[in-house]
Image (cartoon, rainbow, N blue to C red; front, side, top):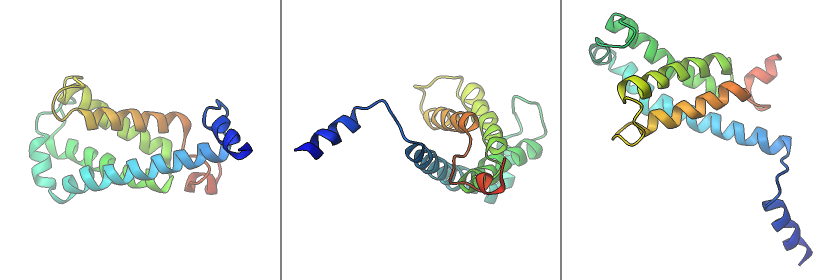
Length: 145
């Protein structure tokens, strides 16, 4: 009975442990990074010419191949850096720019439009990682600050 009361108190507690925070950030980083790299970046990388064609009109008025290269860099390579926890804030910044562009320009900042939700969710996740960093379980932590 005492264990059950302690479990309930823990469940509704506003306290948190550093380990729980670091495990949470690790899980968020790995899942979001892999989802971005596999579901979004890899297809753009392997179909680069089509990606470049789709990027001919972009809000930055860059040539399509340059815009596509920057997008592939963010969505694939930076996403993998986030999975590793390597250069996490730099990689998060690149993905915040990419997802911000997708959400605010491509989807007109309409959270309820078809297809806009993933960009908004990734934008929030990578912005949070930009703010809090990679956590204890990361290559950045091993390298040192």
